[in-house]
Length: 187
Image (cartoon, rainbow, N blue to C red; front, side):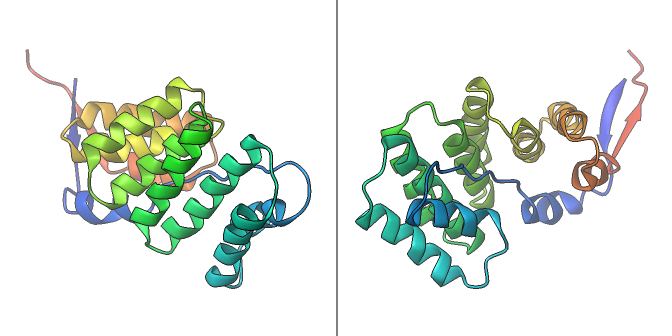
């Protein structure tokens, strides 16, 4: 059997519009915890949420794990705002502090997808999965986008399927799978 993309015009627009990201829980109270709350909830003001995270990094004494998490959370906010380079800088800062923080790789992969650097995104997303990222469904979904855009259509299909297996009620992954058609190959 072979896998054939249908609706090829959606390849460039639809998958890029919706990558998945993951916030990292900050233990305790204070600005770092407020940063997490504002990142995980629908914040009213990007500026307020980003400033809370920046103040936490600048003013609070935190454990290294909480500092790395706060960098990831601020990166997520920046990525949502379209500031991909600043977001990637935050993810790199988190990785320098905690090299095994899978969410830093997951989110870096998402930012790279937005920047259309699909080969680099695959490296980051593979690393997040190797580190057993908590939101593996998001890593598989994002990797599917990167794979599809590098020409690996069967790999993309398999990753969209895996994302849906890991999060069965996820309409976004289900809709992506509807774009594919499986046909028998004559070999």
